[in-house]
Amino acid sequence: MPSEIKGYAGKLLRVDLTEGTLEDWPWDEQAYRSYLGGTGAGAKILYDEVPPDADWSDPVNRVVIASGPLGGTSVGGTGTISLVTKGALTGGATSVQANGLFGAYMRFSGYDGVVIQGASDEWKYLILKDGAAELRDASEIMGLDTYEVSNALKEIHGVRGRGAAVLSIGPAGESLVRWAGVFVDKGHSASHNGPGAVLGSKKLKAIIAFPGDRKVDVHDPDALNEAAKAIYEDVNYFRGTIGGVETGQKSGLGTLPVKNYTTNLWDASDEKVDAYGEKYLRDTYQVGREPCWGCRLLHCAWMEVKEGPYAGIVEEPEYEQLAAWGPAIGVDDVEASIMLSGLTDKLGLENNEAGWLTGWLMECFEKGWITEEQSGGFKIAWGDVWAVVELLEMISKREGFGDLLAEGIKRVSEK
Ligand code: SF4
Image (tube, rainbow, N blue to C red):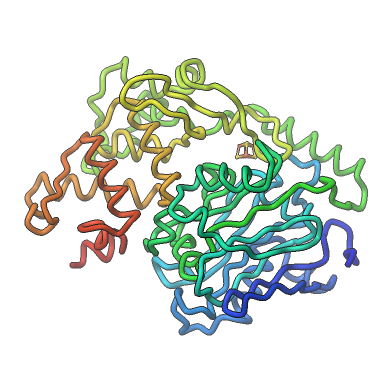
């Protein structure tokens, strides 16, 4: 059904995973105007449909993934989604956003949003294409990390690169890690408060959306293009936050989190600090760009560590990732920080909680507050990169000590 007002597809998709049904849900002008954007729609639906005392893993919980009136237009960066649910970490209402292409492609597929409810017996993935939707068996993609799911679904559906957008959970979401995130187009993360665990509880592994005719009907395309141009000119200085560790250190203001925030004095050499700078990172590692929908800013590039123990290719890490996997855990090798940033996203873990938990564990082991007896033989010290890899993998599969840590730092520290 065409939308009554420009800028909207005019319907949401209701996915009932208990029943295995898909239903178009038309929204009228009043609803769109009253509950603006993806977060507005999600908040309204959550408020109306999820009882206050419902647990996050109760099938009655909803995951609303929605765009807004600018989604997929000429305004740069409007591939954003807002995801609204009752989160697994706090049990409270939460809204998280991720950029990329998915929000735009969902709208091109004919939906302003998707409302996911119920819980399936078997793992599924959802297809959004040309105004229609389909649920399919996900057994082929189970256990894959978020980068692998994206590759696998594109291969299954015969597209490459930007020919489809994929939203998924990694092994952490499958294992119901309370701080598992939802990841879009490799590395865009909508992750705070455990939305990946909520999708995991419903047994929905991924959604793939196709771009169709790449059109969204707007009221005045010329005026919107002018506004988009002005917005771009206003922000075209932006280069992401990738260089924040270097600038934080060199500012002399003591803004860096060092060794689980026990100090703000980082003793890395000048050469090591320089390697965390934006120019060095782009000159040394950037191998291609992967901008979000319509975005012309120099941000969201592919970073490749070409050789050595940390070799691999990851989506551009942000400041919070490089700080978490650098000074906060006693690492001063930027290539290790890049690798750990990518690994966290691939496993489907939320980066902030991962960094805090790791730094906290390192401090606990240093001070003897946690023993190997308690951890089942696992131990970790400041700067031990391979122990971090082992830790993240253990958590994402809820193996051994990782099962407890999957509950999140607050619950673990209370034990
Ligand atoms: S590429 Fe970066 S700046 Fe552009 S929309 Fe995406 S996240 Fe925002």
